Length: 127
Image (cartoon, rainbow, N blue to C red):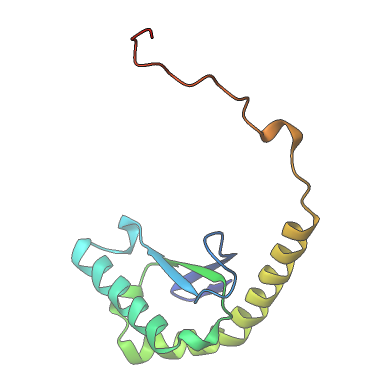
């Protein structure tokens, strides 16, 4: 899902229980700006996520890719942009979680995935 200054990627959480709180990852390339600008934009993105954590269902991970122009946004502008994307984000998160539930429940154990048993290592001394 894209917004003017962000690209949002939603993934079902692979770690822990599906009832864990939503998590955020933020990335920015050098095209966004210098290190100071990139870090400021990332801090603001994390702040908006913290204030609006209830938007996304539990068990959903969000990766935000910053685009050019994001460092020039104020906190209010960034919040407004995320609020405009809220409905799309919630619909996409619901679809992602539903698809992951189907994938996990339909998965069969792989018979070749078990490791062969190995003999315990000796310490080099014979009895």
